[in-house]
Length: 290
Image 1 (tube, rainbow, N blue to C red):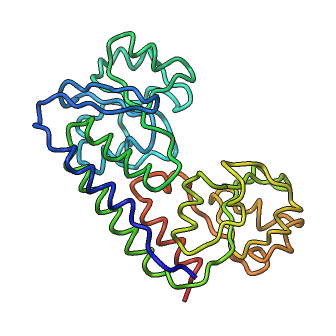
Image 2 (cartoon, helix red, strand yellow; image 1 turned 45 degrees about the vertical axis):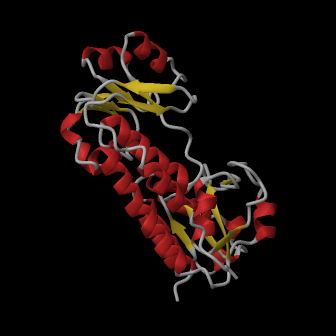
């Protein structure tokens, strides 16, 4: 039985609210995924977003008129359709970005050397930390908003999301937990990767009134089919495009979730976005249809 609602996300929002009261033209200092302080001298007017979360926050903060380019991604919000592209998310074109003369680039990393090249050219770059929990998503929203010069609006947005999450969680706090798993099978008949502790998926499962049967492992390990059968989840969440890899695998017919047709599609990109409270509510409805 779940006995209480966890409220750290609201406490963090209250603490963060005091950080978003700088004057509109004052420099803003935000911390990136490396733990480095990034100084944004003034509200950026020419922004490039290299990830769906960044683009979605810009849309939600009604700053899309300042978005000059995005990286190609099927997870981008529909509102950015038609905005200039700088290539795929995994391989953005530094040359194209530089030619657009942005004053802020969101989401560039060191994997392909894009961040160091942009910073060497004097462009402000902000990449938020890896998302491993709901609190991380809310923190990233606030950080992105602060970098845009919209810190108050971003804190308000994060606050509304947090309130919706706590409200949804209260619906199931006294209900028995349901055994479930969040799986990512690469193909039919191939052992899936399971979301364990330290992932957004695990946090969502817990808050939705579920018990992650892979909570004893960390990250996204590949699990063998025998282990999945032994842990026997009653509900399985999977990316919509991968549902058939679970429901049509003859080796998984003995899993309770497959037998009961309780395999549900959840997009990981929606979970790691401003739609996270909606995703939580969907998971609650599937775990506890009553």
